[in-house]
Length: 287
Ligand SMILES: Nc1ncnc2c1ncn2[C@@H]1O[C@H](COP(=O)(O)OP(=O)(O)OP(=O)(O)O)[C@@H](O)[C@H]1O
Ligand SMILES: [Mg+2]
Image 1 (tube, rainbow, N blue to C red):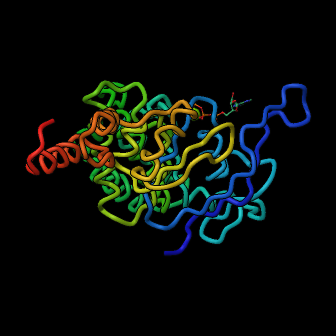
Image 2: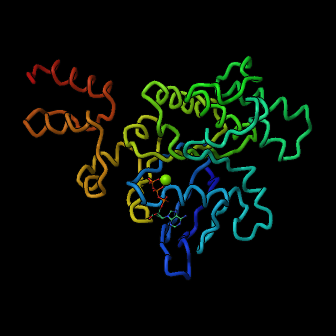
Image 3: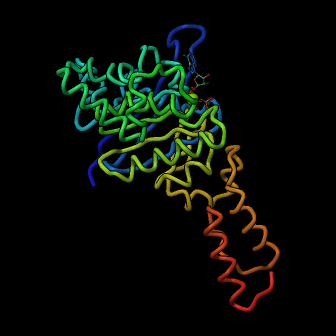
């Protein structure tokens, strides 16, 4: 697998050279493989959003470089080349909807790429289908839609630019459980259709564990942990030190083990825990 994104020794200080200077990222080195689905977690202020914004040139880091498909952020004279490849969905993206109709809102990005009218229209249909928005909604005002639908319009607007890398900053923030499951299901099915590399920023370890293959934990602007969700959850104590927690089911399995049940503590979903308990009980044990 080749790297689609390379983050090379990236440091970023807000307000550099002022009395308010604040180092948000410190010497971050990461390679992201094409086609991967990466979760970026960490407590508040750990640098997740700053890093996400460096990846599409919204923030030019004060040190280091980001290379997207061989295009360097620092050397590139035209950030458009980067932004075409890396689409960024901000936290609460629905606040950035502003056009009178859903279709016009989704068309905004592709229009700015200088595509023909026909191509822009095709892109709008393509993106609406991808996020499973009924095309009947095209002429509606985005402001009349539900919270989950608004967010899907915002995501469609980014997908209409056909990025290779999609970055989602806290895509479920502020949604009720139903809206949250809706958006997570959407993101999963987008990924399963192939062709996209996704980086999802989240506060929720469980959410990230459910979807992603690789989890990167940020702490004070540095990468503190990096591995599969399972590898990370095995290090419960280290996560606790970073004020992060393992999923409830993992905790339950750890507790059972502590009390003498010979169960594996690998489970990170209810289904996995269930299977492990069945295996254990069928072995003739009593919980
Ligand atoms: N525009 C800014 N000016 C000055 N400091 C900033 C700015 N944006 C963020 N910071 C600071 O940089 C650090 C990293 O912030 P960042 O927003 O990247 O963290 P985060 O992990 O996304 O946090 P959250 O989970 O709250 O979204 C924090 O200490 C934050 O206060
Ligand atoms: Mg943030």
